[in-house]
Image (cartoon, rainbow, N blue to C red; front, side):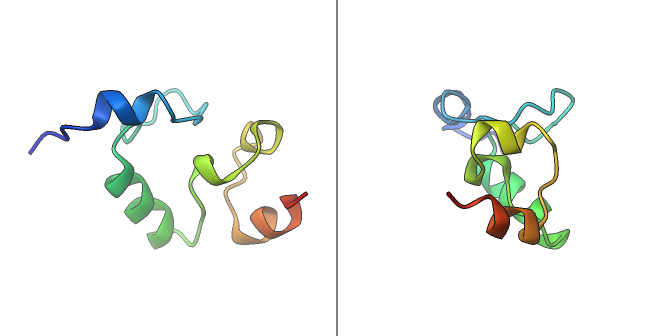
Length: 64
């Protein structure tokens, strides 16, 4: 089933990983990162997000 909010979600998605197939599909993104013990890009400041380090430790250490 297609996500009715994908276009709206994309307007707020700061993920810079271009080959990502989950952009704008927040439920799929959250599930994917949770299964990998990671945090999605939208939780990170832009400069930290660009490192592609989605680890929980990186999230904790990135809080300003």
